[in-house]
Image 1 (tube, rainbow over the protein chains, first blue to last red):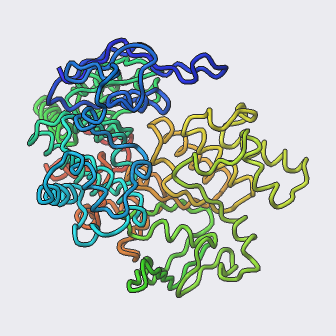
Image 2 (tube, chains in turn orange, brown):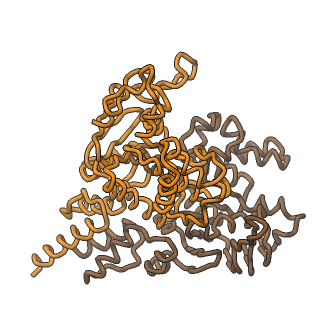
Length: 290
Length: 276
C-alpha cells in the first residue's frame, strides 16, 4: 500500500477562539497505480488533506503512512518523502522561486543528484509534457509569464522529479480547453508509462469523470463517498448537488431522460458513452414502432 | 454602447521584442447585450477587458464608452464608474473587513453621502442575494459568495457595464452556478450589459453572443449556436465546444434528427424525448 491515512484529524488554531476542525477522522488507503479523483466544495478540506500527504502539514491527531512509513515520526527525512509525493499547488505562483524556468524545473532533479546531462533531459521532457517550447521558455523568468504558463511550469517542476505519487490541485483552472485536454492526456500517459499514482483534485466534473478510476467525495472534513465515478454519478446525483457539486453535462442529460421515463443507463462518463447509450435506446424504440 | 475601433495594443516584453497583443479589433457592444469572450491563453482576452475601463490604453485606435473616449483622461472616473470589473481570484479584490464595507468601498471613494450610500449597498447586496451576510467577514464566505460580493461592489456604482474576467475559474460547481445565475439576472432584470470572459464553453453557451479572439484578432463572432457549429475551427484555435453540443453533433452524424446547435442539457432532453 502506497498511502494510508489513519483516523487523520486536523484543527486550525487549536485551543484558540477561532478553532476550526478541518479534517474529521479521515481513513483512506491508496494503492500503487491508482488514478484517484478528489472532489468537494470550496472549504471542505481537500487542500488541507493533500498537504498532509507530503508532510507540509502535520496532523493534529492520526497518522499518515507513505509506503508503510509514518511520515510524522521523529527523524523522518521529509525531503525523501517529497521526492516520492510530488504536490502541484492550486496557485502555481506560490511554488515558483527560481530566476529562470530552466532552473525552476531543474531544481528537483538537482536535489536528486542527477548528472547535468540527465537533468537536462528531464527538463526538456517536462517542458514537452506541459506543452511549452524549450527554446522559447527555458531562459525566461517564471514570473514574466501568464497565469496559464506559470501553472504549466509549476507542473513541469514536479514532473521532473518523477515522483511515485503525483498530487494535482486544480491543475487546469486557468488553461484554455486545448491546453487542459493536452495536459490531462499527458498526465494519463505518465500514469501509464511510469505507473505513477495520481490524485487529481478538480471542480471540473466532466474531466474528473473522463480521467479517474476511483472517486472520493469530501464534505465538511470527511470522505462521504468512495467508489467508481460511474457508480457515484449514477447513484448519488442528488446528494452531489446537495454538497455543492454537480454532474458532467452528459450524465445530467441521462438522469433527465430517465426522470422522464426513458430507461437509460445513468452512469455514463463521456460523450462517447452517452452517444452509444442513446443510439441503443433509439434503435430499440424504432423497432418497437415498426 | 461600447464601441471599439481599430484597436491595437503593443507591449514590449523586453527592449528587443514588441508583442502585438491586440491587432486591429473592431467590436460594438450594444446596451443590454450579454457577450462572452473566449480564446486561448494569450489570445488577448484580458488585455481587451482592461481596455474597456481605461486600465490600459490603445496603442492605436479608440474605444468609446457611451461616446466617451477612454483616452480622454478627464473622463477616466466617469468611465470607471460606468464599467465595473470583476476578476478571477476573489481573494485579491476584497479590501474591507465586513461585506457591507467592502461593497461601500467604491462609493466612499467618490464621497457619496452616507444615507444614499447605505441604500446603494443594500440594493446591490439584495440583487446578488447576499443581504443576510451584510455584517459577515468576507474571508469566511465561500468562493461563490465572495465573487457575488465583488459583483455587488461593482454594481453599487450603478455601472451600466460589467466586465467579468474568468470569474468562475476558481469556484466549485455550486459557486459557478451562483455566479452565472446572478450574472444572468443582472442582464435580464437590471439591463446591465455583460462582458464575460471564460475558458468554459458551457458558460459561454449561456450568453447571447460569443466573440472568439485568436492571436489578438477577432476570429469569429455570433450567437453561441452559430459559433459552436464550427468545432474544427474552434479546436484549431485551442478551444472546444460544450459536451452536450458535441453529443448532438455525434448523434446527428449517426443519422439521427438532432440539431447540431444544441447548447444546453434541457434542449437536448426536450429533443430526445420527442424522438425516442
